[in-house]
Amino acid sequence: ETVMTQSPTTLSVSPGERAALSCRASQSVSSYLAWYQQRPGQAPRLLIYAASTRATGIPARFSGSGSGTEFTLTISSLQSEDFAVYYCQQYDTWPRTFGQGTKVEIK
Amino acid sequence: EVQVVQSGIELKKPGESLRISCTGSGYTFTDHWIAWVRQKSGKGLEWMGNIYPGDSDTRYSPSFQGQVTISADKSISTAYLQWSSLKASDTAIYFCARVEGDGSGFYYLNYWGQGTLVTVSS
Image 1 (tube, rainbow over the protein chains, first blue to last red):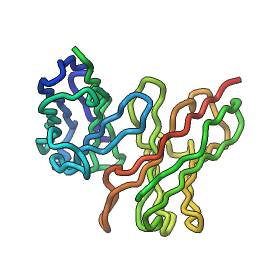
Image 2: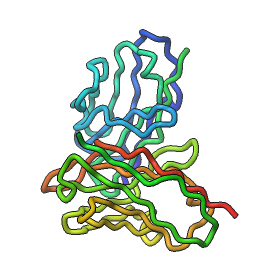
Image 3: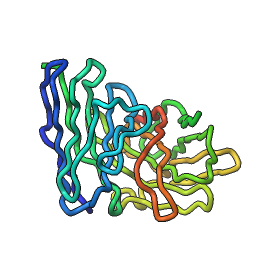
Image 4: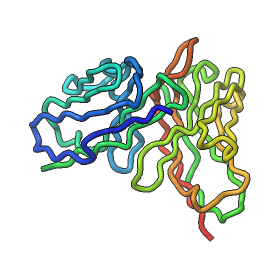
């Protein structure tokens, strides 16, 4: 099983600032990586797939990068609605696995 | 518009059986895998397994193999997640989601249901 490890667990950021979230795979997943956002009490929402492609309707302030085992989700200027938990998920191997999540909170 | 709608809250006792549902609309139901994802209170996401309604091909993550049954009725565009004997440790929110993929496989989750809270308590 490919283990996905996200860091940090919690990221405290002021509105308008930039946030960078990390996701590391225990083995190469090529670019088969997705990112999701989950707001409190809501279902997750797809943000990024293929490591760097924004899903339909996702604002340009969200960007993804990386390949192999190291990936980053960057939010260029945090808006109030961006404070949430973010998960990465690999789809290179079975079973599909998620990271444990990074909570982005207001500083 | 693509929509995925799940059945409502469930409160069950240990040992009871349960089936929850997930109905897709706004797209050809038989053309996309449907996955089930578990989220325990305050915890992360776990991919349980998925089904291709077109031919009922079903895959289970090792952690969930033998613990649940995933099925689908394509005539009513509905997928199911079923337990034969619930345990307290099955208490969680269960999400279903449409899986994006192609002829080579199934990949990531694009359209999510609202979640079904299952509470198992005596």
